[in-house]
Length: 207
Image (tube, rainbow, N blue to C red; front, side):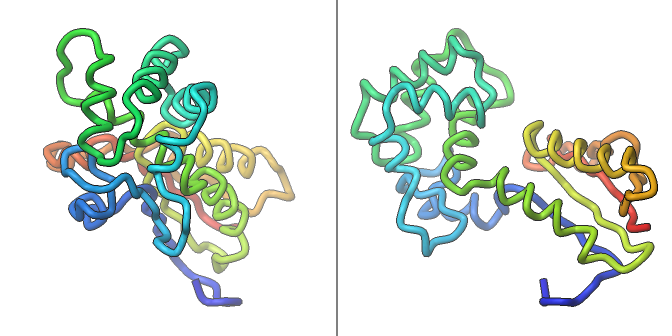
């Protein structure tokens, strides 16, 4: 975003991109063997491997509950399995360890999906960055300019929904007005793409 410039339309597409998922060496995909990296910004020194292999069991539980939305019992079981299996150096090995804690068969979503999400969010500070972006939005739009935000899990969507709600309830101090009262979910043709089936779209307009 150019400094001082205002826009008529901004689209924010949150989360990991397909090119990042498709490149095994980036370490985002649990289906492709690669190093435990997961850095959005590759100039960062810390990687997912450090969280997986150096975090205390208690800290892992906290990460899994907060950023993976695992239940306390599932988070404890997964964290213990990770600690017991250390060192874990690859994405597929981490996925195997988490899968070993799962009871019964699974259908669409791999049991390690939430673990990968949690570690990635914790490593990259994704929710903090989203909060900062939301605070900047009113200052980046021209009057009647629109912001469209696509989120892919409830943690992101909750922050966006809360920001839009606060703007709607701010009265004369409000700078934004929600266009979509409820999140728009993918159409049938989008749902055939597994990566987009959880997408949620919310739109607001600058007053």
